[in-house]
Amino acid sequence: MRLWFRSALLESGWHDDVRLTIEGGRIARIERAVAPEPGDERHAVGVPGIPNVHSHGFQRAMAGLAEVAGAAADDFWSWRQAMYRIVARMSPEEMEAITAFAYIEMLEAGFTRVGEFHYVHHDPDGSPYANPAETAERIAAAASVSGIGLVLLPVFYAHGNFGGTAAQPGQRRFVNDLERFARVHAASRQAVQRLEGATLGIAPHSLRAVTPQELAALQSIGSGPFHIHIAEQTQEVTDCLAWSGERPVEWLMDHAEVDARWCLVHATHASEAELERVARSGAVVGLCPITEANLGDGVFPATVFQATGGAYGIGSDSNVLIDAAEELRTLEYAQRQMRRKRNVLSAESGGSTGRVLLEAAVRGGCVALGGGVPLLRADAEADVVSLDAAHPSLECRRGDALLDGWIFAARDRVVDCVWRRGRKVVAGGRHLARDALEARYARALATLLA
Image (tube, rainbow, N blue to C red; front, top):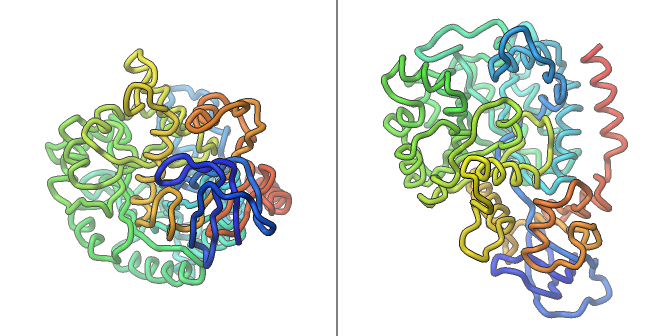
């Protein structure tokens, strides 16, 4: 298979008249400054696919349903109760349908791989399914039918708060002890082995949900990516200080062997000293700017982290709005509002902010999802996105200006085609299976929200 682009963003920068030869799901060869030939599939602009480091696919079902003010001040904790009410009713079949629709939206937005932080393991009454991987297999099926690359992150969740506090009734579908979780994890491995290109990691939900002893035990299970929610909320910081005398990130860095295998999701309320330690460790921070804004979490100090050389990726988290470009735009705009300056995260004078954001998200995202070759180069997985150069926000632009137009000036329909491991899954801005999967999603919601 050969793809020819009038202009493409390769690892070495922008090049004109580029041909990618794809074999076995990888880029076998790149040619520059070549004319298109018969058999080439021709496109205007090619850029790398973006990893989505953090998703709860099932939460797509409640997008827009938690925007009604309650009697008391709304925050993350009140939103969480609304989420519990939804998940308490969701069947495995509905979970699969909802997650598959979320995945096609991700692909249409330019995401090509997803880290699925998967914690709904049991029946609605909390009883284990006969098949420990019942819901993991549903996630794998959603990835298969959509074509997205999957990094499945089974979540260990045992407690309701720091110090081993008992879990709440709303958490009963999530809770395992170490022995039962080991069965879930082993069965989940079988689920992903049947899916081409999929990998398995592990995810202690948060320091609230695991004890120090459990966290230590989890680090010996498997060798894949290791993700954890941390320091998302100020209340979490307060509770952690009361429990341990340390802040969440501080405690983690002191008591766990944090390295490039780790992704610290959110880390919104980390201090400068904590962020310096994270950067030195090689861990990636998983930022979810749309969800963090929606939940009122706060703003991650990205400029401080960037100055330390820290790596970050982006994720769609609650999937309240799935849009890779808007995640990057929201990240930059929040920094502008905090600092009352423009182009805060651009690397240098005259540099493109869009280019910096995109490349940081791709590089950090690849590390967070277990490696692979980032950007477009020979031997990389053929995860490629074509942009519509005729879109009004890209008209008459070249090079980095195309990225700035996409990220900061466009609303939708900039992504034209998407290939995951060389397989085309989006054409003309629409997923090839959108009609069928959208209808299935609608049927699931009709039952779930009845």
